Length: 493
Image 1 (cartoon, rainbow, N blue to C red):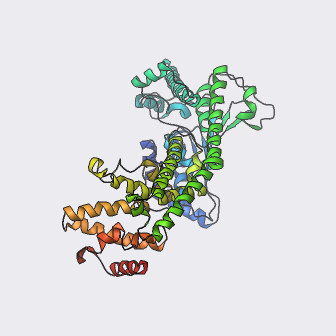
Image 2 (image 1 turned 120 degrees about the vertical axis):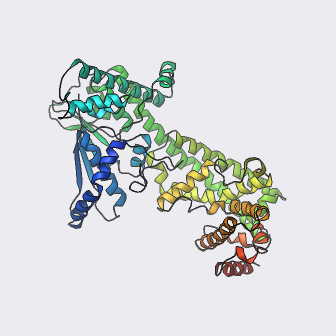
Image 3 (image 1 turned 90 degrees about the vertical axis):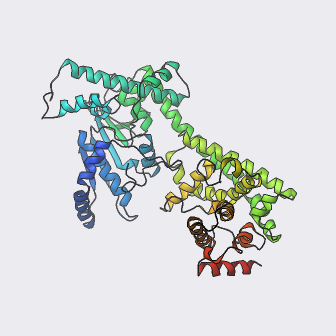
């Protein structure tokens, strides 16, 4: 998916980009310019923007809504999208990103009981998709021809929908069925997943509103199989309150129950982090803050004191480092397994706590890395695959929240850059590339100290940075940054 028009549609953990059907995206791009002009006029008149779409036209309405949500100002009324019989358009990351940004409620999808289009993307291959598109294409010879092949096509789509639904349901329940695992090795399961609010209509007046995307996937399969009773008043009702009245099979009920249990598990995990882990993490960070203050008064600095570890308090700081790593690694595993609410990564408290942790503890990880000369085994710390994923995840949270480019909030890696450049300036001489990196580090140092994301203890006379930077030849230093750095160093003396 294009990160230019849809920068939020990605995974914040590993920067995985959401996948969207290429044909749908191409159709949106074709009308993007003209549509943007029309929408701009509507917004200028202070009118509410609502995009609608039917069947294969619905994905364009969805993408147009997402595009406008990306561009919306805080004081601007957000757009809404209503679709009828829309096919699925994106993968799990797509839906996760929409829910994380709290945009899910802006999308309402109506689905009829036997409409195959909302289920077609759960089918196995593009050839199946072509057959059904030909059936709905007025220019095709197969247009609305009810043949045995069309009935077989419907069965094929639902058979594959069954595999996807059952596989996901087993994952929700935490079980593994050998048959399904074996089939997955031979049959590629559809990556498409639902998002937004779904309203299922039986044709007799009953509306069932479903906001849980995992439950939607199950109903897309089971809804065609069971005779759903309808209410007399035709009023909307949530699945949670009407499950007993729907007449679903026992298997369907179990699958839907599993999706509900997964949501409860996500809430329990979040409560555990907020009510238990948060307090413990803050306690360990306070210990390290005291260690940092003591190290600075000794004239050596936080990083170098820990790297040398000549005193008992260095051992205790290392214990805190390891304890904190355990908490954050467990949280990262929950996130990767989708066992925390989608909006967890956007929580202000989580971003603040994660940023405090990263700025406090990553310098200690870097010190430990170079103290044990691990760079000789694995390469430099900032090399991909060497830096612990928990720090990359948390840094991505902050950059996304501030709408900053990737890598712009790497202040916690300052010491790794210093250590790497110390080695490179010795071995590579006056390489233009190395010179530029040293100059950039100086610029970043000033910026990070000014915004208080980096402590001034890095400028102590006995710090690794000052001992390396001061003797560097003039070509490695630029004015006025170099004079500013020297002034800050003298202030710390």
